[in-house]
Length: 464
Image 1: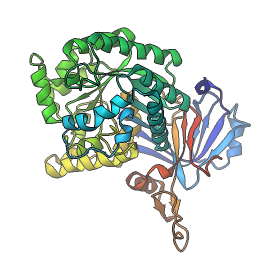
Image 2: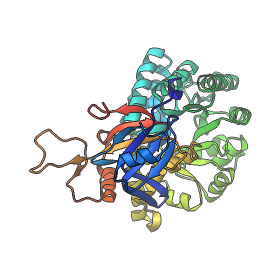
Image 3: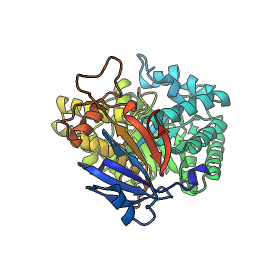
Image 4: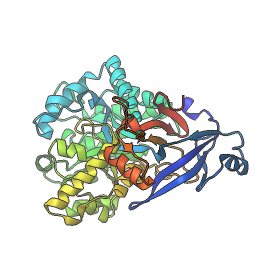
């Protein structure tokens, strides 16, 4: 496959930035990162004065390509731990409704329409391109209940070279409309198995695309269906993704539908769906015992701040969850979230933490360093790729984005000549440039993106 084809060894020259811990960034002004023909980082050097010296002392890099960043820096690729590719056309349409009404009004009709291959091709191709343009090198995708178009999404991700966990959605209760649900528990199971088998057939080693078992959320599945999916996860070793405790009415609904369960978390735990490969989106309204259970099972959390605010679900207590030792990444949750950008989620995560700090929990604030960690290393741990991506160490794969800012010329920019949303005036340190990017940047600043050393996105004049 194209995703496994050798590449020419390349030296990435210039400033680079990555998280070394939850609270610390490494900021290297003059760096050189060597990536070998398999897309793996072979060396990392700092304070580089002459690239020819770097070439000469690193075996296999004498004739290497050189990609240099100016007016910017290299940063690890973003990891979106929760998004709905099938809802992309609805982005920005959340109306005046609650979560459950919003599903009926916007979500189910759109997802149902993607049984049509040509429409799914348009939607999924566009969304993968859009997420790549925002620097997302890995995404955990929800598709629909339809096997052929779920498989199509996996095909598109593999073809474009974006790492992805692709899930065929399971939903077999009357919470879902009759026109859009699994007709039986058996169908939910057999169709999920069919998608798992297909995705593993196109990428047997899971180097780019992997399957993920996807019960939509507890109210959309019977307890028997959830248990069947838990058994399927154990049998296949596949990842699992679902929603949990997104808003208070949903928590009340779960309690009424599963009266013998101790909690929302217990519904999943009883079904065998809480594992170290489980991604739980939202987790806004968890009790103390639920947090303890999630931690004990090794399940992970996807924090989706833009969506939680847009649908008025609540402010997730991320600081408290981190303090409890939970593993957390960021998710765009399109189309509950209004943007496919993880950089936007970084900002929103900061705002949500400050809303909490202003209202009751003074120690809730998240720093710039912390949200960038969640967007990269945190997300890598959520999707089970922490040993492969998320930072710039020897042995990790080169999943990266080139960020270029807008140097302001003397006299100011001519009318209509702005490039990107971040102006720099020459006095800013690298740390200050990163801060400006986090608070003001957008996809115009992401001029190139690589996955496993392969260029998967670029803008016009860069790397032509």
